[in-house]
Image (cartoon, rainbow, N blue to C red; front, top):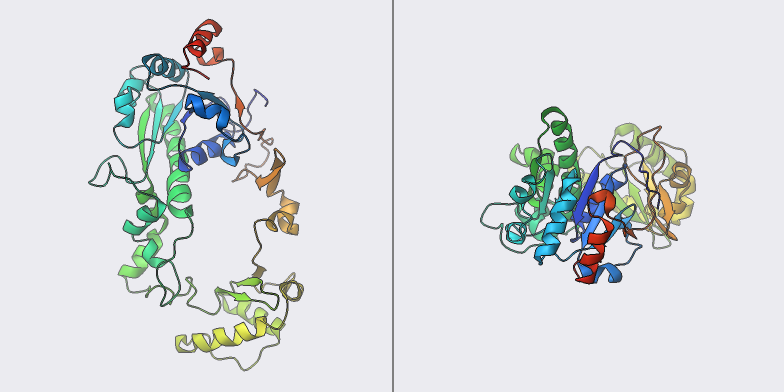
Length: 373
């Protein structure tokens, strides 16, 4: 892996305390744009951790025993030259270890301390366990997801863990870096997945309270409408229809050769319209329908599998996926035009910590004590 990072975050150093997906995802987002990210894992986990994990790309790794005084002292020394710490423990754990915000700001007042939790640092649920599904449940988000008459359906763990958690934490780090440029002072970021999931649905809270959004699965964007849903094709695959605007709808039905359709503006006709579209889409394969809609403004797209997506002509032309360690994975986003591509190599162990303030002699001693790997 190249030592010289490039991009808007070049020169920014991040210590990422090992944890589940949201923390590493935030670290990946920063590394993708030039930050030097050092992942601090448990000593035993360094040899076990797969180096091909997409969220570890572009990073270095070490193992450090943070339950020992020597490990805590070493971590504090690492923070002297760091700009950011990403911490993913339950509230109070970092303080008990001696690496909480106050402990580290005493060493480096410019440090940005990003805390990633599900419930946040305070509130009655803060000390309890939870997962993405729990966070989006009490935020009200989960109640919105699913088809009419069916139970709420969690969209895997994308809304709480990744969008509401890791991405919001990365955004908070950027805000704090901008502020530090003016004030010279660090900042503690309380990134809670429950908060992040809620703000992603800001528009829909307004819609529900204003009466413009009905029960789950009956609305324009939640599979209630015939012009915004998925349909099965003759070969058991699917198409995504997003022909919301009248001109796009007209383009779609014209290319399908459909006439005498019910009025799409009449919600009472939506079930009949859906049934008619479903029948028609089942008459051809997905590939045949792709050919029908190619180059049009019908807003009809194939529902691709994860394996198919990198091969789609549009994704291939844009380089939307890259090969890293023999695996295809999404390229960094968003794109800053004119910025050279990053080295996205799988994570490598960092043996020389001298640039982080720990010399070779001390590092050897820590290794001999089993504190550093």
